[in-house]
Length: 310
Ligand SMILES: [Zn+2]
Image 1 (cartoon, helix red, strand yellow):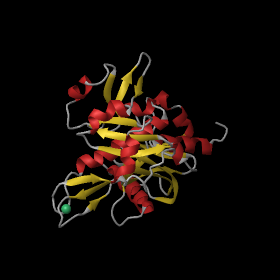
Image 2 (cartoon, protein in one colour; image 1 turned 120 degrees about the horizontal axis):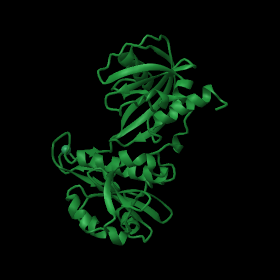
Image 3 (cartoon, protein in one colour; image 1 turned 60 degrees about the horizontal axis):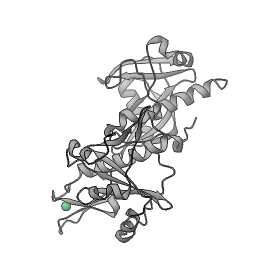
Image 4 (cartoon, helix red, strand yellow; image 1 turned 120 degrees about the vertical axis):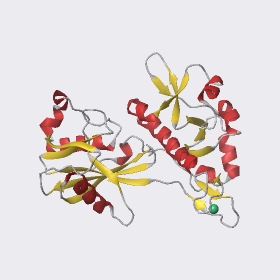
């Protein structure tokens, strides 16, 4: 069972990051003024949306509209396709009210976590990428080694320490987390976490620790959280998860025992479910994670795999 990672929300398969060009300031200065360049606005990790009669749509600015914001706010280059280049500007240093005063009345800032599942994948992916990158910048304004201020470089894909005796380079951080569907072919293990909405059951997950392989992290997390031992840990797919800066690495794993004992105080329940249970989840007052998550995609792939007729 594999998940097509490129098809998941928050992946950016169609965006050429031009990693070899973005450190060239002259090239960047030229691209930023292209009439077809687009600018994502962020305010404290919220993205800009436009209200319409039917739904709220993600909104980007042209260079002409974005130029006043570029002068005194941090911005980064995300990538491009031909002459269409994508940038992100973080306006977190200003108040939301002040920013919106200078924009059309139907524009507003919204958390991608709430809006993501109803967006088109490509738009959600671009917004997520910009959000994750600028979140990292916000949290790394000072050098972790000498505590001097750091400055942005290479189109926003690096921070450099301003202390000449240190000069350390800091790169955007991604936190690897494993997410796993534990099963025996007929039953799968899902859990309710206190942070999830009431009734939502999802796959187990946890952060990878230093000195640990991904497979070890899967076995450790499942055992620690539920007392279930697993084997046959196989890779399923991965998903950037910009809430705030994780990379979810998905696995299927076979259980070796069935008696669940919840060891993690963040879990309030964990149960075995058949695919029929999952297909009739709402009858039990339960529901699966949102469609933008790798968890949902892994669960649906498991249902299809064990029941090819569905
Ligand atoms: Zn330093």
